[in-house]
Image (cartoon, one colour):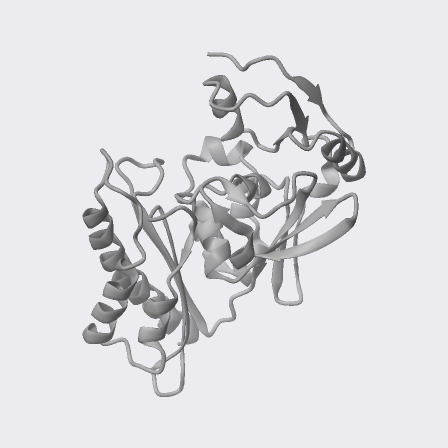
Length: 291
């Protein structure tokens, strides 16, 4: 299959891209193209205009400053995965990216493109949700920042205005007092996750959970922050009882319906098991980081 006819633009700056986006609010924005192009080729989407950001070099960068890893929207996923500064500031970023499809896809796919595509089974939206990250977007009226909790609205849908473009994605750093983990279950390596759990954990002086962040992918219409499971763990040691209670609480967030790849009941079992395993791995890494 080939895409339907469309008008193509390749702006050479963010300002030009924003102007084009405002002039053509129904246009598709092409970043890495690893999601958009298959959709167009199968004619599941038929945009009349495509705005390709590949020449907007100002949108490709990785900066670590003020306890934040700021990533330009056009940064290739593989470049962020291999960035030593980002890995030191937040090792959960590289761990999450290694789960994204295959290296050849990550060589082309962009960080901003994955976030804007907002696939609820994708790893980067779940990572952003877990870390309470945010994006900066630009439009003709200026720039604004949107938190992860406000960004993802529905399947493949964000709260961006039709004339806005994501310019950067911000991931908070993880101090050495934090452990981390991202685990998922797929039918084959590189497939979208049937369910995945992203975890970050900090213990207090009594070895009880002081802070914890949990998010899941593949279980609903958006990446899901597992708040009730987090609350079940606070101020408690990571005993089997606490882990079981957190897992059961997390399973209650599964809303994806039965389908050929996995039933709702199976996804609930996966989430319950992944919460337990992710927390234990995060705690083990925390011990190594602080020892």
